[in-house]
Structures are given as structure tokens and as C-alpha cells.
Length: 109
Image (cartoon, one colour):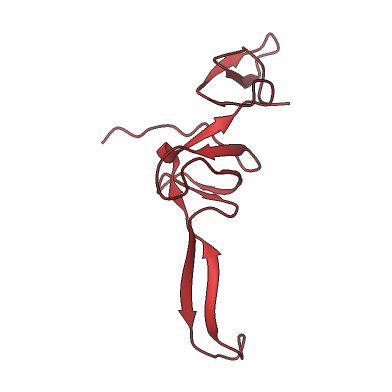
């Protein structure tokens, strides 16, 4: 099976382009490359019922973020402030950086 490469990193700002949270913007908290999923801050909130235990004496309903497939998010460019596709570019010193396809601005600092 052909695997898609992920061009997202932790702390990136992304916009959701599909699903129940379409149009929302959030920060990437975690990238799972094996499962091709990303965890985005305040996106895809799920409610889980928890029984009282030693750690959680109260119990009740706990809300947390669930990971979503990385094909449903797009990276936001800092300059054009739009969701963009990105390309990899090699600098003169041999370092690879991510570049916005719309404005050719470097995304990596």
C-alpha cells in the first residue's frame, strides 16, 4: 500500500476542511505518522463516560480531543493567512524547508 507523507508538524496552525468541525482553526498537538492522524486543539471533541476510580474520585462525563485523519486538515500560511498546499525546497546550505505554494513564503522559521 502506498503511504502518503505528512508535511504537518507539532505546533502548526491548521484549518479543518472536512467533517463536523469544518472551517475551524486549531493548533496541532500531536502527529501520529503510523496511523496517519493528527490531534488538533479543541477539534473533534468527544465525551467519554468515566466510572469513579482512585485517580478520578468524581467520575462523570469527560470531554477530550480525538485524532482526525490528516487529509482533513490543511496548513495555514503565516503570510497569506489561507489554507495552502506546501512544497519542500532545499536551501543553499542543504537544509530542507516547507514553502507555501501560493506566496512562496517559508513556513519553517
